[in-house]
Amino acid sequence: MRLRFAFGRHKYRVKKITLVFLFGTALLAALFLSEILVRCLFSFPERGFYFKFRHIKNFYIPQRLLDGELFWKPKPEFLGLKYAEKKGDGVFRIICIGDSVTQSYDISGRPQPLKQTYPYQLQSLLERIIGKGRVEVLNAGIGGYSSLQGLRYLQRSLWKYNPDLVISWFGVNDHSLALFYPDKEQRLFVSADIRKKKLLENSALFLFLRNEFFIKKKQRVSPAEYFANCEQMVLLGKEKKFKIIFIAPFEYEKKIKRANYYDEYKHVLELLAVKYNIRAFDILPAVCMSTDAGNVFIDNCHFNPDGNAIVAKAIFNFLKDEEFIQRLK
Image 1 (spheres, rainbow, N blue to C red):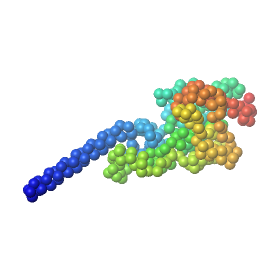
Image 2 (image 1 turned 90 degrees about the vertical axis):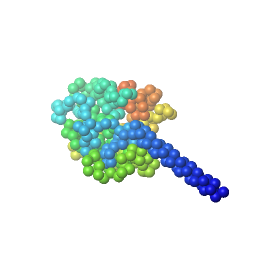
Image 3 (image 1 turned 60 degrees about the vertical axis):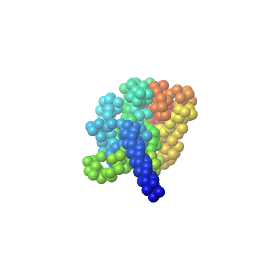
Image 4 (image 1 turned 90 degrees about the horizontal axis):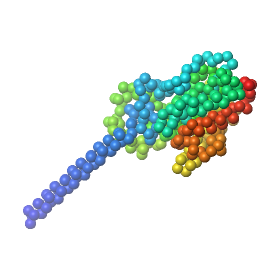
């Protein structure tokens, strides 16, 4: 009887150990497969390195384009067009700064042809009332840029092109959620950071879980920081003697076929307009009134060629009655 009982206990222990072993093996296999899956779907930067978007695989930034201040350099600058810093006599120069909405991308994620971008079409419209060769509209939009990058780009080099007017259109990337760090805390990776990494930070699965569930979600640029960035653009304009106009940011929700403002960011521009007596242009009514908005967007923010034509026309109608444009006729 005792022998049978001892044998039974031994058999139970073996079974228990076997179950623990199988469970442990299954758990390790699940963790391994999850690690592989996350590595395939997401590309996490080294600790302290720059990200792009939280939910989209990071794009590869060639070493030659890495920039400690701008994160990645604006290449090609002005969509490959060359401009002298000193503009010609009697030329009214506009610089359009912004993200890929200004730069213009098609459905495949590639830049649209130059003639389909809104800055190019805006120049053509202005030439009709000012005269050919008397106005230049430079496209300084860079895909993925936030208002912080736009401000730094403007401070570092764009002002040297002596613009008379800057049109600033940021918000899509500012509003998007950050990966680990907001824009103002980003810095480029240096080799010393490898030694500072925790063991678990070598795991993409750990980084994913930490970012998704254990870190308070942060925007790349908060509304308060957006205000500070745009305010610095205004102050730079006063210092360098150029006017600045802001376009209120918005997005198009294709599922419900409705365009919505980023309300907090739009409110920031309204506050700036009152504080500094500048113009904050709301372009969305022109887009929605001209046609069904769903016919001019290729995703939640980018316009197709028809959309860019509407944007250019709306900005032209806004500018043509401005005093500084009237003086050029």
